[in-house]
Length: 216
Image 1 (cartoon, rainbow, N blue to C red):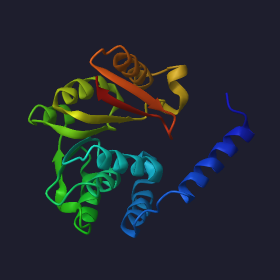
Image 2 (image 1 turned 180 degrees about the horizontal axis):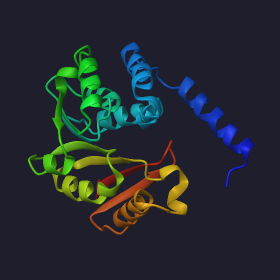
Image 3 (image 1 turned 90 degrees about the vertical axis):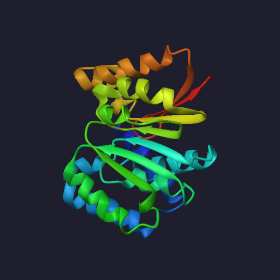
Image 4 (image 1 turned 30 degrees about the horizontal axis):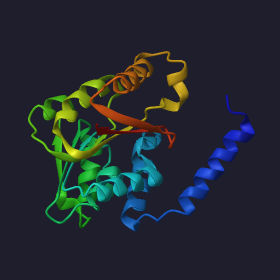
């Protein structure tokens, strides 16, 4: 367990990393502030500047033209990734929360990248059954109990050189001592991917843990 001083040091290092990374455009800073105002503690679901920029760089690195996102929330990560797409690119994003979707739409309408984003409202597993690949980048950040199902549905649609990025795979440290269904779901997902001989993967100790997955 981290001592109090170590936790403070980690927070200082994250702040340092943010200050020494490419700053966010004003619209995304406003989206974060508005999400905090309207969503309260749920605003912690935003992946943040460092992870958002990582997703953007992944999209650029694989030359993404089509992106799939499972779990949009208020649209922050969608806008970060959409900025890396060409003008004719497409990002399909899924969510079930009408309030979050309404907030996201209001910011998409103000962004030059908003026209690239296609929101699919409803259970993501149902939406996945209607889609065809390939997708160059897949970002999974939805309900944890369905992570294995999302992964299994998305993998066949992943482009040969594509990447799946999965958020919250360290789950605030609870993977070390799982207590509830969400904890156990993340543990099961991590083990499921580790044993999957179709792929290779790495867990990055970034924020709440990000797993990157590629075809072997």
